[in-house]
Length: 282
Image (cartoon, rainbow, N blue to C red; front, side):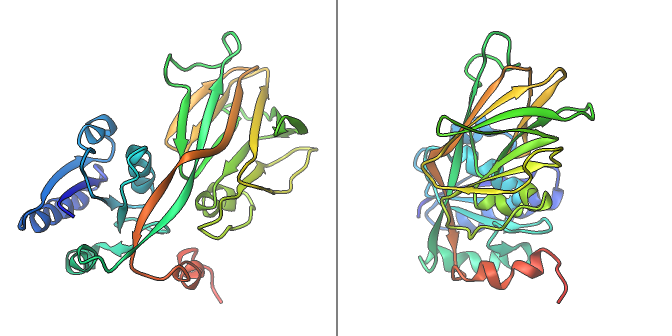
């Protein structure tokens, strides 16, 4: 590895400080290093060509941003946790400087996580997004639901072109296995194993409609058609929020790209730390 990118959470001063320390460590050899805020996506993308490894310094939210920035380069990401849960991170901030050289000696392995491709279709004035802004990638989930008004939205939900049901709910979550431990879990959804390519649908606070979660195969295309007399929203990874009007159509499917994470712990480590990360008590 000769070229490294470090993206940090800009709201944490200690994240920037650690990013600078890591840059000094990586730059002390023959490699080159660039450092950028994880919120400056365009600036980061301009430096991706030729980069061998990305370091994400922050929490899971920072990794979500880094994973979307890394599309379509497929550069491995090493997550350094400065947040709380750290489901997707591999190193703690306290031992990052000490353990990083082990990864540079090719002692790790690469785990691939599927990502969603989200397409927003606007019949007439059905969606408030500008030109060129209608296709997104998501590592965790996409949520279509109500805006600030406390009224349910009606979402006609189609699976591979066939009508499943019309949900009357606060919203609908379509999640990956990675996202199954996020908002979907808080809404009562199941946990999928990290390498699963299945899709998960979970309604949020359904009213007189089906409330069960559904697990769908990787080839599935989900279409959500919004029917509402008030404002609705779409949220991509909980970080990109856009207004939707009645008539908007959101298509969600498995995307063409994967997020790639550099790991040292075995795949089973996810399960051995699951209850600890969720703060469950035995």
